[in-house]
Length: 294
Ligand code: AMP
Ligand code: MN
Ligand code: MN
Ligand code: MN
Image (cartoon, rainbow, N blue to C red; front, side):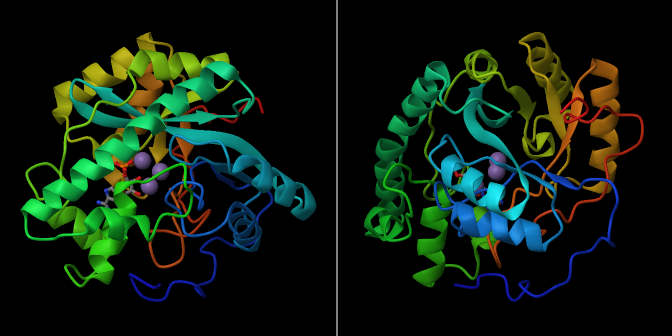
C-alpha cells in the first residue's frame, strides 16, 4: 500500500562517500514498519547506509534476522530498540543502541511494556467506536505484522484504508492524539527504569526525536537534565521530526549537557516516511557522535 505517493525510486541524496554513513533509528514488521528485517537491511545497503540500527518499538524479535542479512550483505547492524516511556504524563521514546538482545532485564522490561499494548488497543477501538467508527480494533489487527505487538500505526493504516482519512500523517492530526477520537491515556515504562534496562544490556540510551514532545523551553530543559542525571547517554539531534533550527538547538543542548549526539531516519517503510534510510544531513559540528568509539 502506498500512502504518501511514490518515493521508492528516488536516488539517495548524498554522493558516494568515504566516511561511513549511519542511520540509527528504523522499524521493521516486528513493530510498525512495513519491511521485514531482511528487506530493511537490503534497502539500507542500496541506499548507501554502512551502519544501521534496527530499533523496533518495545521489541527485539527482528534483530536475529537483521543480523543474519547484514552479515551476508556487508552492513554493520547495530542491535537496538525504541522504548515507550511515560514521563510526567507525556509519552517519550528512548532508543537503546548496541544492546545485548539476550539481556534478561531488558527482555523482561520490554515484555512488560508490550503486555499493556493489547489492552490499550482495545480501549482505542472503544474510543473510536464512540466516535462512530466501529470495528477499528479488529480492523487494526488486519494490519498487524507481528502477533506480539499492536500500535497506533496499525490503527492509522486501518483508518486510511476505511476511507476516514487520506493518509497516515493526516490520521495523527484528526485521530489517536490527545483531544481527538481514539486517544487513550496509557502508562508506559518509567524513564529511569528504561535507561537502567538499556544499560543492563550494555547499550547506550538515546532520547529519540526530542523535538516532538511539545514540552516548551523549560519543560524540555527539565527533561534533558533529568534524562542526563538518570544516566541517559545521548539525544537524537538529527531526525526528520526536527526543523533545521531544532537540530541546531539540540546540538547545543547535547554539548551543554555533555550528551552524545545521534542521527536516525525513523524509517517505517516505502511511502510512509519523511526521509528514506540514511537520507539525513550530517551531525552539526562540535557534537560527539554516539558512535565515536564503536
Ligand atoms: P504507539 O507506540 O502505539 O503509540 O504508536 C506510535 C507510532 O505512531 C509512532 O512510532 C509512529 O510510527 C506513529 N506516529 C505517531 N505520530 C505520528 C505522526 N504525526 N505521523 C506519522 N506517524 C506517527
Ligand atoms: Mn512507529
Ligand atoms: Mn518514536
Ligand atoms: Mn521510531
